[in-house]
Length: 306
Length: 111
Image (cartoon, rainbow over the protein chains, first blue to last red):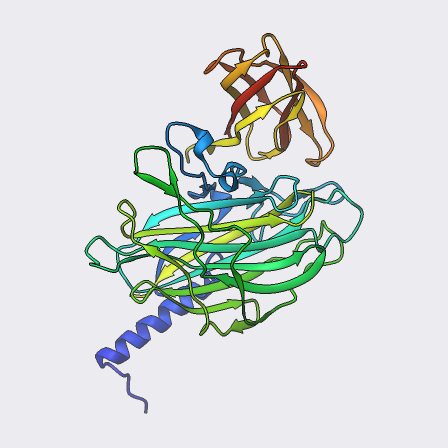
């Protein structure tokens, strides 16, 4: 005869097992592996869910905005409609969030969601994503998209004390460069120049998505499912773990690959006076040719440990 | 359920000269939209009209029929209301030689 384990540890384990089983059976959440508290679950059949364009800083005139930011435009809700086969649709439902570059080699676009955190501890970002070039040529076009990636923009709380930092983990999948099909994951820790903006000494700007300073993630080569023409789309899963207590990356996976993040680090700057407890997350897309590149997301889950 | 609505900036602080076109905007979820052009700086665009275009695929375009009178002085606004546009929309036009218009283009789309 078995005896139920009614110890506090046993009860907690049973509660966690039940919660996990219920979550996995939920058609909306079952494709994620969230930490115990879900902070954000963005399904773009419910609208934009707070994802907006990353606008650059300026003062007095928009002319003071750095060029990297000037090119950004608003994201769209897309059914991934194609000239030859019609709407592709999202992972579930009709709509996905779409980021589109301009048709100029090196052009980028960024979509961002701006939050703050209430607890310094582990967080997990999960997303289903894909990328494709504009289907303007009857060719495979697998090297037209240069990169797809994501970043956090984080800062310690206002009582963190001396040495507090703004920390910006960046990850990108370098798909192609100069026509070469590179296909590898990279990170960035190298600081980029910080530019004062305007005349009042209150605003700075730095284009942290500039092409310089990317480093290869260890064993970061990965061939993703691109499919056989530009209008066939497959969705990919990514999961990125970060600890807000130590401000360090603790894990990264894409589809069936778990990557070694022991060499990973983030851009780090001294804490800024208006950004306490900032928790921003952003996705970006970059094109390698004079053709628009599109990044799509459906959906996004941000969770935290308790 | 409230009606889905969004404001999208599709061009900001760009200078139009000669032929111009906004980036394609996809809003198949929306039943109507208003397209605004505000002049940040203007010179020589008096009375010039831009054309709303729609597209089956975001790559091939056709005039929708609506025209928008471009703003001719700083902070003036031109706008156009359209509905039944399918999925893709953009604004195109041609400024006369020597004319320039620095603009911010906003789309308000609503389900």
